[in-house]
View 1 (cartoon, rainbow, N blue to C red):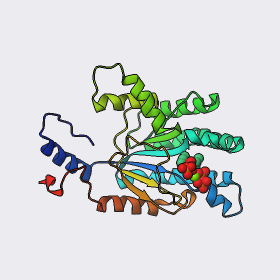
View 2 (cartoon, protein in one colour):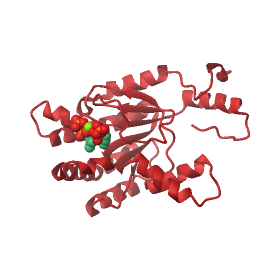
View 3 (cartoon, rainbow, N blue to C red):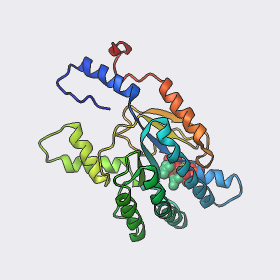
View 4 (cartoon, protein in one colour):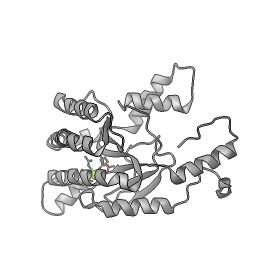
Length: 255
Ligand code: IPE
Ligand code: IPE
Ligand code: MG
């Protein structure tokens, strides 16, 4: 989290930032990868893996607040995923639509506010309607902010936000973060990511939250997304808490 008072000395601000980071609610972001390979390894169509992955999303969302997670951003469909075969793209889009449609009622009951982040101009009308309904019906929920990234590219978002800010007189980071939220249709600016988890064994970001992950702790696991469970989430969060975040300072900035 950014230090709130710009007039503090850099050292005092850094110490405050370290203290805040130690006890603050977490923003966890997950690159939910490996669903296709998980299904293929079982001789099943890739779509079975994506379906199984949607069940994991429900379990992870339900568990997240217990681990101190206030914001959870899940990568559901990247802007580069449009390059996949049409049948897979259509199935994924239908899965997101059905997930939003089914999940919104339990989201309200569980206090989960849903935001879908990314481009909207290439989404179908039925998916757009599902997004808008889910966002509207969950807008007053406060236990967890669930951000689903759909048709999301961090580089595109940064480029569009930069264009939007180019003629502004203020060049504060907060202004840019507001612009980033606007171009992604997010209701509020994203807090910095504290912990980035990627399942499926790859060790890359694949154009996800490049700005927001500036100081994220990275956690890569070979577990495929459909086999990721609440114990895996606990392990990731436990490892996060065992790490020392420094934000460029020396450890003695704490005192
Ligand atoms: C991630 O799983 C989900 C999406 C990209 C939509 P993949 O579909 O990439 O699964 P693998 O990596 O091929 O196993
Ligand atoms: C990243 O996974 C996108 C999502 C999880 C939605 P990909 O499978 O598309 O990423 P690459 O192609 O392995 O980098
Ligand atoms: Mg993949």
